Length: 257
Picture 1 (tube, rainbow, N blue to C red):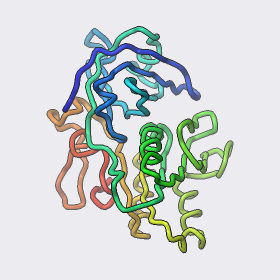
Picture 2 (spheres, rainbow, N blue to C red; picture 1 turned 45 degrees about the vertical axis):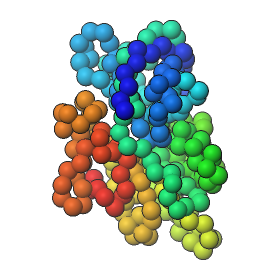
Picture 3 (spheres, rainbow, N blue to C red; picture 1 turned 180 degrees about the vertical axis):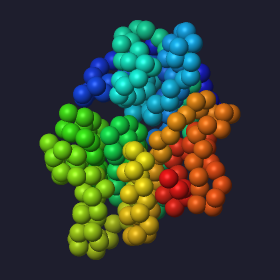
């Protein structure tokens, strides 16, 4: 069920270079949300910006939800300047989230840039289900890393300023092909979110090694409910699915990016 709330901001703070976290008092959405789902925010009371903006649910804490975002456009810059006790118009939870009930005992999280957004929430739920969690996080530089709420973290940065120098998929490949990992008795499942080039590289790796993997796609989105048909993702069967309604989470064997 999609819920609309006029919600009060309870926290607004920077967490990395030009990256902000906002906490919103939204009890009905909070108790209904699942990891991988998102909310749509009406940024302004005016018609500028006109469209709502989608944000992954970063975490839920009691009757509050959190989001993170980079202030790079008009809408997100307005959002970054909102203060506690101001109110915003939100709808959610939207989309289909991650399936945490598969047959696996170790979750491998793979995040690129702000693709880290759904994973503190997912990590919390996985730990409640007694799953082991290993996290791989990539960013352009150490100043853009957001690692709060993650466990057993391996880091890759494009410039080598922190952790492995290179892409997070290169790092994942180097570790997952390690003999000890290959011979492990653990059953792995990969959960990923990030830029499309990262997800494409991950799909290649998962196809090559026949790994169970779910990806949360990043795409342009308007209504968030499937009405506008603007967030189409091509499936391997040649038909199109909607990121906002069928996704944003898909099995990696299901889609073509």
